[in-house]
Structure formats: structure tokens, C-alpha cells
Amino acid sequence: MKRFVLWAGSLMLLMALSAATALPAPSPLEALSAAELLDITAGACGTCDGGDPLPPSWYPTVDYVDWEVISVKESKPVTQNVRRYDYVPNDSPATMNVSVVWNNNCRRVLVSGGANIGASIGFHATTVIHCAEIVTRTVAVPPFTTVEIYLADLVTYTTYTSREVLVYTDGYREYTGRTESARVEDRITYMGTR
Image 1: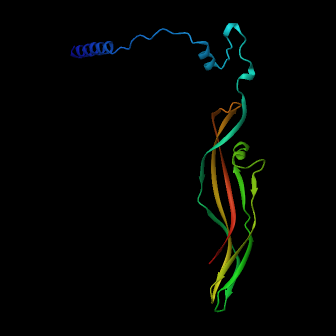
Image 2 (image 1 turned 90 degrees about the vertical axis):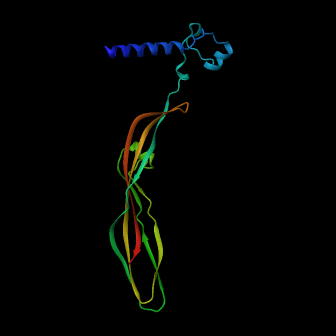
Image 3 (image 1 turned 120 degrees about the horizontal axis):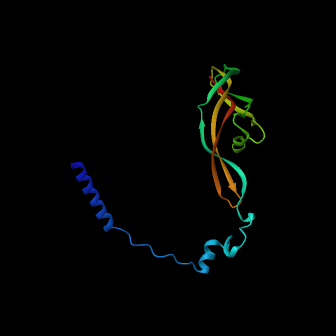
């Protein structure tokens, strides 16, 4: 019984408070002036005076589908395929400079992922991008020492995640909720000494 009395008292208090703070009644609707109606609708009215609906060309349509990269995750570089290039002894009392020339075999490979996301990260109608070039470096060999020059491949994997975007003829962009991921292998041959 006590609970009921407390509940009823609380209810009465809430009703009294809400009645005291009630908002005034809204004002009646007013018709817009012709100038204001023109500003709001830009002169387009498909139902005014029994007129025809708006022509289909008035509505924006999808112009193209785009893919936006929303995240990029890169792995730590891994050294692979270490091989000796040259073994250079210097028996003289002066520092000897040796010129080293090699092909860096640079390439990007789309390991996984579809054509849609591939195009958004630079793979157009291909899964391999060759960026190889001939590299020349000078190695200083200190007096009375021997230096081993080696080549190795540096490999990095990058995962890209993109989302699909519909771009309309009026510039509006709509996100569809669809995402895709792609994995890219970057490989380059570098030179080192030991």
C-alpha cells in the first residue's frame, strides 16, 4: 500500500509540473508568398495546378562509381634473398672507392583484391607495376680491410581498404556501405656492406 501511495503522489507531482511548464499552442499555418515559394522550390512544382510531374532529366542520376581508400596498413619490411655481389680487399694504405651498379628490380604486385579497389590504388588493367631502374652507388673500402658487398630484396606488404561511393550528376556523393580490401607486395633490391 505504501508503494501505491508513493507512486500516486509522484504521478500527481509530475502532472502538476508538466501542466505548469506546458508550451503555448502553435500558431496556425500561414500560406507562403509567391516570392518565398519560388525561392524554396526554384520554380519546380510537379503537382501545382494539376501539372505534370517533374521531367526525369531534372532528377540527378549516378554519374560514376568511385572507390575511396579509407585505411592503409603497412607491414614491417622483411629482408629476403641475401646474396653476395662482390668481395673487395684493400691492401693499400689509402681508402679505395668502388662503384657498384645493379638493377633494383622494383615492382608492385596486387596479391589480392578486385579490379575496383585495384584501380583506386593505381593498378589499372594490370596486377603488376614495374618500377625497376639501374642504380649506381660508391662504396668506400678503408685501408687494409676487406668489404663484402651484398644485394638483398626488401619486401613490404600493404593492405588497403576502400569503400564504394556513388557520385551523382549534381556532385552529391553517396556511400553504399560496401567495402573491399586489397593486399599489395612492394619489392625492391638494395645493396649493403659488411
